[in-house]
Amino acid sequence: MTLDLCPSPALYPFYKKEKDTVIVVDIFRASTTMCTILHNGAAAIITVAGTEEARQYKSDGFLVGAERNTRKCDFADFGNSPFDYKRELVKGKEIVFTTTNGTMAIEMGQESRMLFIGAFSNIDALINRCMKDSGRIVLLCAGWNNRINMEDTLFGGAFAEKLSKKGDVTPGSDAIRIALELWQNAKNDPLAYLKKSDHYQRLINNGVENDAAFCLRQNTVTVVPLFNKADKKIRASI
Image (tube, rainbow, N blue to C red; front, top):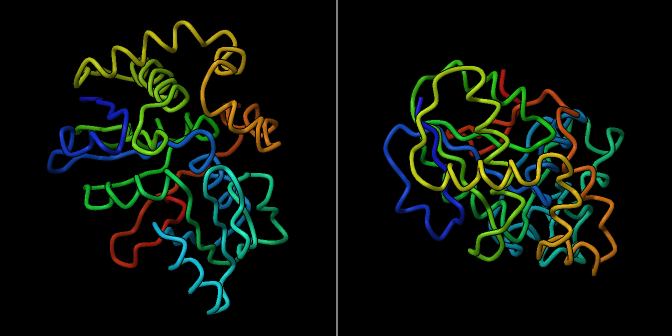
């Protein structure tokens, strides 16, 4: 199995290959939040890149989660915090979702052979699902406005370490090796390590730094979100 990591959506054209399995990662906070939405019983997630499309869904009666620059959009029912999506609010519903970085990465990767959503919260379930395939896996980091960030790359290192314990893994590029080294430096206390990061400071500035600790907890859910090409909705993988 080959594992690679694309550290920014802007670089994805240089990593993209036919028949890849893509895992979109946006630790702070979209991928963690999507795992929570499905764990709490939502029927599906409809991701959209733009806020205008999200507004239209809202006017059509859908529940909408929308965030830009770490803040909830004024027209939305929810923002991008996993704590927004309580079971009693989302169970059985289709949730429309747009964020600054994560949903753009999903749009870029949606033509891959398979597209999953990955987070620390579902890391073991995701690895077990990936062990069913023996092809090439690309971790597509959402980053921040097409720039590399620490938390998504850090997840890549944790994922690579765990996957290597399950089977033979060939690094696809130096990006995986860099991620592994980052993880070795941070693994004893990821939260303390990431307090130096740009996005942790954004969370503080917007009063949602408590989300960070939650987003770094491993295996809080067993759901593996899977993008369906036919209807472009994300559901729990079976």
